[in-house]
Image 1 (cartoon, helix red, strand yellow):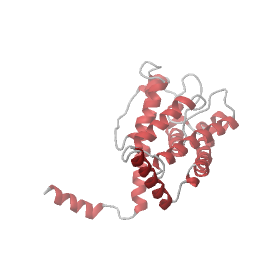
Image 2: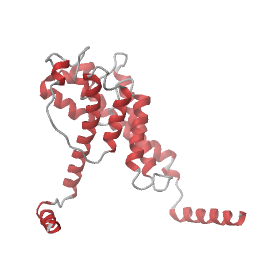
Image 3: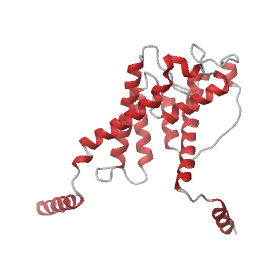
Image 4: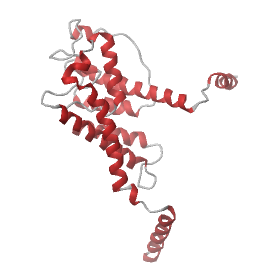
Length: 242
């Protein structure tokens, strides 16, 4: 009975167009990333370090990327208690940084852009290596874990300047939310109009990372037939030696 009901629901409501399926998948994926990632930041900031630290934030974003589905909701007053009821973008009690990235005081616009290009290039470079079936690659089903560990590596090695947004959707959407939720449009003006760097920097970095992997690794892969011959020759050599 249950399977019959499920088939009816699937026949009536299941999406047919791939673009819509991909949209829902991306929507849910980004939601989970923001939920775990920004949640770990909020816990660290609002508890003033009592219930979180940089490492817990890194783990929050790493696990958020790895998780497939998790939905939670609710209303908390912790934000209002922390900032005395004010929605502050910059300063000691700022809370806008819970949702989007802002540059450290020492970071210039150029260095911030290069930071995002480098981080995003490293991410794409590693993802291409992990998913390349003609390289060592990762075991099937382990790709999300490996990519999550790449995010963790970027977090602990490149997070000083501005965190590690390295994804336009991860930064712009929460920033837009804060603009409409009470922090105002200063979230786009803060840090010398910083907002565009986590949007366009990763786009450039993605192209750079892909180009580096292609030029250094993928371009030099053996053709499938030649690769099979090489593998056969290696096996023959092993048998001969044994």
